[in-house]
Image 1: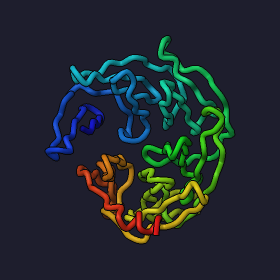
Image 2: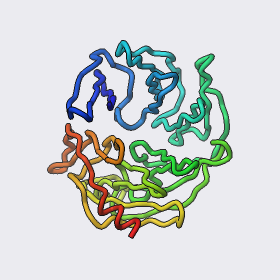
Image 3: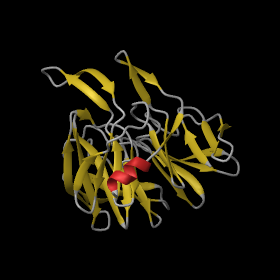
Image 4: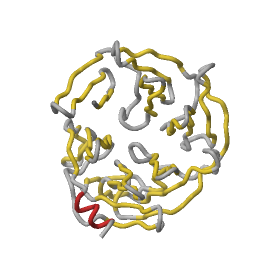
Length: 273
């Protein structure tokens, strides 16, 4: 089953019956907007946890109820990023701060763990951390049209800059890990004025991939679905999906309320000819 939360409700999706069910109608404050992006989601002690800049909440799958474990005060962890590994939660945000934290579950507090060189961050892919082999990679926008790859090293104390890809497309959408590749959708095309502000925007359905072995970026030569951004990437068994997000019609943002399955067969053939 798939569990998803928005601004007020929690849902369960059954892949067997292809059906949705609302299982909690009192989920306000659990996740921050965009609800599928700037929240760290992980399972600990068989319970679902969500951490963001404001709070840590826990979901009980038996009673279908949320409990707020901790409310943070002035954390400055905007666009929170993190990973739960070996019963340890590592958290950071390079929007404002240059610190990596470990979460102390016994005392429910964030403890300083390390620092890193903070570089410009224009946003990141939904679910921007990818595990490939035994390594973890972090992706972020380093400009309106550039995506950078970092490797988390030294027991999650350092972020090593690996490579950057510049494109005519804005790099804000979703990504998947597949074998030794990070496959990602770069959102759409944008126009900017003399002050660097976006004046118009249209979405594309193009995907790209980064191979961690040869340190190369390539464009996937086929398209998949309606262009969108801020969608939740989902991998179930050997299938890939995009849930929700937004599309652009007449230069206006429109919410997408469907889950589409992506066929990566051609992608796989391109990556592994």
